[in-house]
Image 1 (cartoon, rainbow, N blue to C red):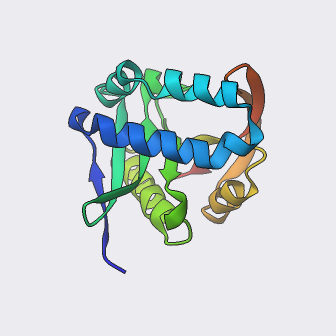
Image 2 (cartoon, rainbow, N blue to C red):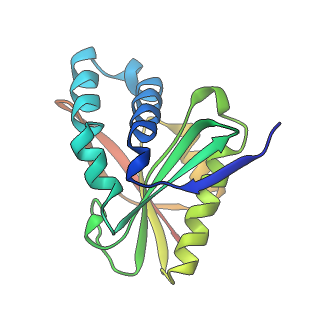
Image 3 (cartoon, one colour):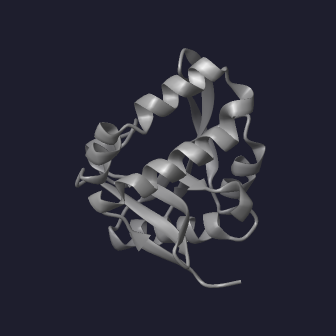
Amino acid sequence: MDQITIVKATADDLTTVQQIGKETFFETFAEANTEADMKHYLAENFSDAKITAELTNPESQFYIAWLDDNAIGYMKLNTGKAQTELQDASSLEIERIYVKSQYHGQKVGQLLYDKALETAKHEQKSYLWLGVWEENPKAIRFYEKNGFVAFDRHIFKVGADEQVDVMMRKVV
């Protein structure tokens, strides 16, 4: 297999981030949600305005996984007020690790996670945290394997549907 590289994204990567985000979110969650809820979520959360604001937020960082010239996944990290909940200055949130399904099992998620851990250490954060859908046991196992433990739950809305995320953290 060719080398996968992890590259920090900029505002110029808007289309790439949108495409990966929409594709991977749909692949992962369409089966468990109504068509209307999926359409609403994708339109709202991957709009030009929303992704541009996220890409240009100084408290958020995006990293894209590339296989040659093919973007195969991405990760979004948040600090400070960009964090979706805790907003603890000593933490780094992994808001998203999205990998195209045809690349699952090829360590792309691990490479992205390793970059998150490296970033947390570089920024001298005390811990990493994230929310993962309680109905996604594969992702939960991935984070447990990487030393995360559950500490709470929160609601994640997809359209009108309220779903439960397991909140997990790892001390750095």
